[in-house]
Length: 201
Image 1 (spheres, rainbow, N blue to C red):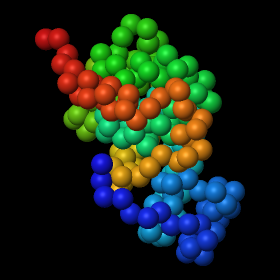
Image 2 (image 1 turned 90 degrees about the horizontal axis):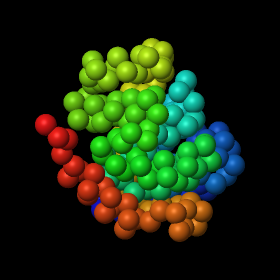
Image 3 (image 1 turned 120 degrees about the vertical axis):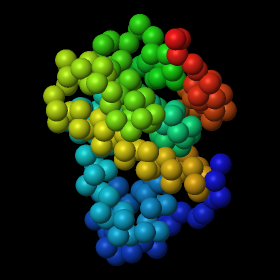
C-alpha cells in the first residue's frame, strides 16, 4: 500500500470545483477528495468520469465488468470494493462479480461478457486489443463501444495508480454496504492467485 496523504474536505476545495461538489451533493467520495489536491485536473477529468462511470455507450453493466477486471489486474482494493457496490446495483450478481477474479474466464460467461474480459486482459498486458479478441468484440459491439472499452479501461488504470500510490481507504459507506460480500483480505488473496495464473500452452 502506498503512503497515505490527507484527502481534502469539500469545504477546503478550490471554488472552481463547486459544480463537482454540487454534482456529488456535497459528499464527494475519497478518490475525488484525493484528486481535489489538483483542482485543474479534477475539473478537466469530470466529464470523462461521468461518461466512464456509467459505462459510456457500453451501458452500466458492461462498463462495470471492464472496471472490475481492471481493478483485479491492478490489485486495487479501493477500486474493486467501490465497483462491487456499483456492479450489484447495475445488474451483476455476486457470483458474476466473484467470477471476474478468475483469470481463466470460464464457460459460465456469455460470449459478449467473455470478450470484454479478454479485451481488458489484452489492454493491460500488451496495450492493445488483439485481433482475435477484436473479432469477438465486433460480433457484439460497434466501434464506439469498443473505443469505450479502451477509454474506460484507461481511466480506471489512472485512478488505480493514484489510489495505490497514496493508499486510499475505501469510503466508510461503501465498506458498510459490501460488508459480508467482499473484504480486502479476500480480494488480495484472489488477486495474488489471478496474477499467478498461467494459460495452458
